[in-house]
Structures are given as C-alpha cells and as structure tokens.
Image (cartoon, helix red, strand yellow):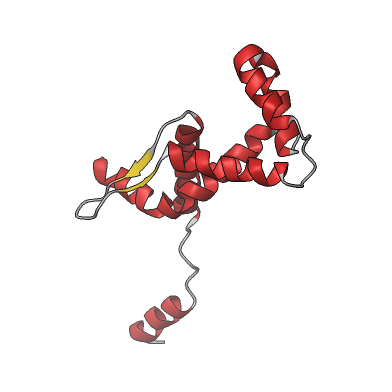
Length: 136
C-alpha cells in the first residue's frame, strides 16, 4: 500500500470529531443565560463585527404571562389562582411558590420558568459560546 493509499484509507475510515466539548459548552452557556433571566436580568450576545442579539427579562415575563394565562383559560388552575398569586406576593410571600405551582399546574413552578428561559436563549447559544471565546 502506497503512502497515498494509506493516507486515503485513514481519511476514509476516520472517526468523527469529538463534538462533546462544544455541546457541553453550549449547554453550559444556555444554563448560565437562563439563570440570568431567572434572576431578572437580560441576556445579550455581541460578536465581533455583528449586531448585538438580546433576550430581555421583559420578553421572558411575557412568555411566562402567556403560560399563566393559558393555564387560567382551561388547564385546571383554580379560578382564583391569579388573585391568590397577587395576594401572596403582597401579603404572604412565603406562600407564593405554592400559589404559583397551583396556577401553572406543575409541582415545580421553577421548572416551568427554566423551560421558558432555555427556549428563549437557545437560539443565541452558538453565538454566545463564540462571543465568550472572542472575549478571552
């Protein structure tokens, strides 16, 4: 086998590149960006030579509002769930989590929030990882 044939054989039979490190970086970026939204902040990605892209807390809150309203409109939430949520936020914050879980119809309201945040920031993740590496 000539050197050229051997090189061609190695090329043809090469294993695919290990992409797990990149996939892990993207997932970590999504989690970090979601945490920023859950903390009430905005997520901005600015790459060299490209316009900034952003997901704002306002957009996150709008998506959460849509979820809450859909739950109120027929998915089994108590008819007084929104009123209870306002009351608990103002008068009994320690009861707020239970009321939010009742409104969203889920045992873990924070899971629902994280799913919304993840969905919003996911389109920015690839550029976010690249932008972070450009900053280094």
